[in-house]
Image 1 (cartoon, rainbow, N blue to C red):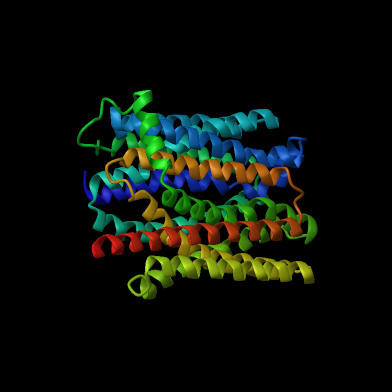
Image 2 (tube, rainbow, N blue to C red):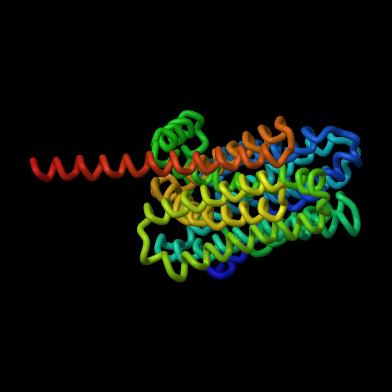
Length: 401
């Protein structure tokens, strides 16, 4: 199997997450009306998806080390097909939530392995270049998928979103079954032993720098989730924005993220240190929060959207550094670090979306939440900076002695 084929398969597997997580969010109000349920329960269809996805990755990582990447990828794709079918056929909120849980279990394995098969096939220097372009694609899809979801909802129904996902799941299954070859060179028979799994995960999560990078990732992705989840209700209920127009608004966040990543790759990648990149990302995120605060004062959807676009621009700086830095801190634990990193990121997304479902969907709440996310990024950066300064100081002291 060529490296180009591996990249293609990885992209197909990764797309399952971006379509399944955010594509249907413009239809949340319609789902609420169609299934005669509450706003909170509809929003929790995102929360249960993320927690299932997190649990799935914790299992998929070690099992792929023990049995190989392809068997786990095939099983994950089959589960993705089943979950999508359950969601499309849902007649009440309970069956939709069950379908989202099943969908999350399937997507979790696929999303984990999309990164792992690249680590198996490429050297670190090659992978850094590939991940730079992956970042642009991954920043684009969260903005594009709600546009497609809004179109399908407007012209067909909310179920059309999950019918589309069912088709994507079937294509993913066929690609893995027909094209995918095993990429792991040596299986680890101890990988799925509970004691070893716990030991590996405890070793990784005890590292404070790793947790700070993770906090930045969660803060960054939560900015987009905040606009997609709570913003869909605020746009329609407070500003009378249509589903299609809200989808276009989500696209502007995507454009801002892509422009930011391209700008960083082209002009700043070799000129700014990692710490300076993170610092500017935090500053721009705070500037976006300031604009959202102004939008609250003038009661303007346009200024609120502008504020989130600025936040998206700054967040792209954070994601460019934090994600790669966290994954490469433990080169001898590829499957495990990918699993715990992905799982904790999804648990963070679960906690965030679940918390949003408990709060009133108002513009003022969106502004307050955006400030909490910005402060989280700033505190995480400060801790990393202080730890690095102390490490340099200790190294200098030792050299003097």
